[in-house]
Length: 333
Ligand SMILES: [Zn+2]
Image (cartoon, rainbow, N blue to C red; front, side):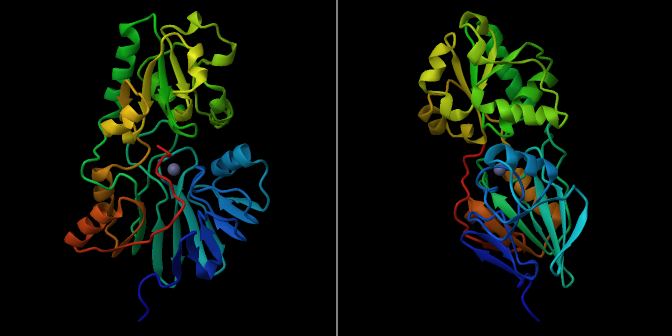
């Protein structure tokens, strides 16, 4: 009998599903790509054909311009691609993010893409799908990574804002997903004030709003006087935290929302005064409890800190291996 999943090939540039003649999240342009979500290291432009959720396709259009050969697939819809039954189910990572479920010759394989298990007001929550092989990320695959409760991190941000109304709090947040999630989490904690944003996240804010995510009152920093922003929150991509642009802000307290803020050195590197541990990836407990819940025969690990998770699987009698894909960054948090 052939080994489990022998129809799926791991290449440095992505996962190739042979009987579908299609690649998952390839880092190079391909004839046929299935894309889990819109982050740049998973969704590249220039494929001849793309299968993804309508939200992910909208994000790709927003970032790369109109893509050719696109085919939308809604959550829960099933489609035959070559000799494989394919469906997309929610991954809880960002708007439109999906796990890809593949069925072929009586075997079921789930490719998680990036995922998390905690509630996120901007996307439907992760759906566990029992399968033979679970292909998972491991961005935060070390026991040291345990993300705190999101609400308490948001409260720390609000407390800091209120403690000095003459300053603004500048929050560095990844432009796709994290920025809009921070805004909706703030709204959920009762913060109804206008929130200012850096121009680089304007189109993605608009895209989220077009998909029914209520972000409340937003204002572009470009049109605002310095003093008007005192006592307010300003959201910007991480790259803008220490650049000249921030000089237009009233004495900003620099914050950053990322799972990496667990590591003090990363916060120091960016001169972050208020590190907020808010992640769009599963932490160690979420990774291991998800594997326990899905109970696959095998776990294949795509990117991140593979060793510790592999070891954990072995000690729990689950066969595990690393795929060594290249090109996936772990900065999208
Ligand atoms: Zn991602």
